[in-house]
Length: 332
Image (cartoon, rainbow, N blue to C red; front, side):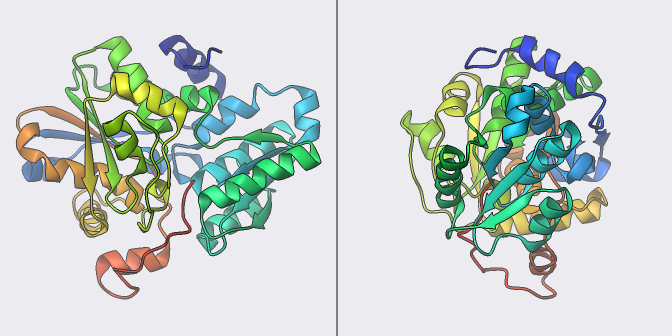
């Protein structure tokens, strides 16, 4: 595969991963129509294996590894859905797996990685420190290092949910997708613009972790403080491969507050009866922020995952937890 994945790579990935993942539903919600003044559909990656879209990329990558690489094992850095994806995929194809996570990462996600057979190492206060530790261990121990974002095979894998959106809703006008490191938004953009360049692709990131936005806006890889509770969006820097794609395929970029994502979590519970993590709710939070521009259009919102912690859910509902608590140790 070339450094930058193509539509053909995504189509090949769709066929490759089909036996191991689920085709997730795309549902229309009249309650969201009324809120946004648009025809609103939700792509439910919260219904995916492990409750998030990342597993598509992990299966696509690990399934293509050589026997020698599987024997060496894989190592990655994560505090959530990416780590679960690699752990699950390694188990499917007989590879050992190590995941480096920030100290204080989501305990439910750590437990899931361990249940899936991964060795979990807690190291550092936030994601990029864990990533650097994983890279060191890869050199010292001989593991195959898997970057959570800068990998064309991962991007091709996660782009498969965009193919499903266009198969189910070929006349969609706008796709709104959460963005942390940018693999999901890159995959959506590659698919949408290749099939119909008129489809608008809009990314949504947290105000309290806006490195991806700043990188896209300036055209230079940026670093930014990350204090958002939205684990899947809380990355502290821009990444070269997705940013090189996003500059060509992204129509707009919206920033949302943690409080706006809190409200979107609750709105999804009320209107769609679905539980989403804050990153998964970001697409709705972004849509509500630009709803005047969406009026009368056919809009697909990507609910990227449903793995919310009890503490964050209580905070969003206002029945416990701390709404303002910042979690700088989160990431992929």
